[in-house]
Image (cartoon, rainbow, N blue to C red; front, side):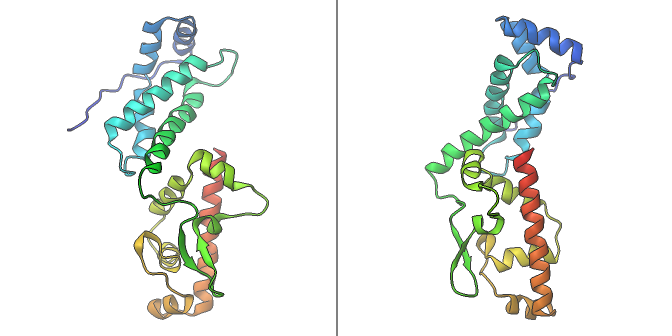
Length: 214
């Protein structure tokens, strides 16, 4: 079914504060008015996760729940706009739904083996972005940032960096390849492959941290 929605014009800061004040006092009409005028925000966030086996209409519904939670818990004394606070609530609600869905499906986890190092030790996705100074484990599972990692990969410019990461670690169902194999395939030296791989991993890690801290 084609899902269509007409977006209302965003409210001014003064209008937003007025309706928020009324909504927090239990005015359902004011709350619904805020929801209608923030549907564009919900759709924008939901679109990021549309490729993760969830229909857009379902994601819009889930995101709306997150927006309502944001309206109901917004602190009027805060200097932030509703959109700033609501964005995280909407995204968390969508991620929670996707996380629950993953529990009953055979999906990728941070600990799924994606290859091995030169000593034959298993390498998983967490190894790619792990930094001993940061405790990613709890935060990754709390936020389900595995989705973000694949999102970052999908948005990477097509080229040697992306190609080498995918081939080197056997992502997206590809066979894991050694640096020498990749070098031979691309017609470059193994040391050059190593430098490109290191640069690409740093890019992934930095993008991951930016997403995690946003």
